[in-house]
Figure (tube, rainbow, N blue to C red):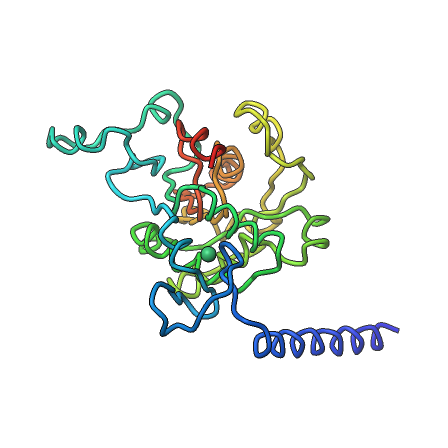
Length: 279
Ligand SMILES: [Zn+2]
């Protein structure tokens, strides 16, 4: 019985990939940010970026990449960048970090969670567009270059087993796999486990988010020895309040991990939430 279902699975996945190939030949390429039909790469005004992940010029220019000067811990851009630079002193940390030190060592994100970033991340998360993972990974290679250079392992924020079954893949795992490949850092896709099925964090306050993910993560049995004293880069798609990343970081730190650096594709920068929701 198992033999036959395996055969059927195999035949089905071949059919799906053949259909996808045909689709790529017959259907016009569409921008993965807005769905607009893309003209050929040679036409002006359109950008072809990273193998198969295509964005139109408009969507590309709307992406808001996060740049220095940043808080060295939270990775958030300083609101008064010019003043901070002119005093010539060592950079201070952000107000959020001063008020409450996070459980992770540092965090960086590639882009602000604006309208285009939200659609792109949504395509990977819910739209089966795993071909976007290499694009996101290339962004994380840029904003995470320093931490990846000293990292021992790349670990994705895990999905709960039930959700993984429905979605078939973990979006953070897909991004992490490509980050590990590009940076040549060892990839541990299932060292962290989500043992509690949590409700979506959307619409929850910072405190409620922390309570929602408390106790949600565990280390896979027997992984402690491997991670002891090591530097881990934790991969996530979107960091909002950072509650999920912190819950993961706490579990890793409790098992003797030396440093946990968080890399996320998109970040809801504190104080900019309203700009984002009105977009
Ligand atoms: Zn577009």
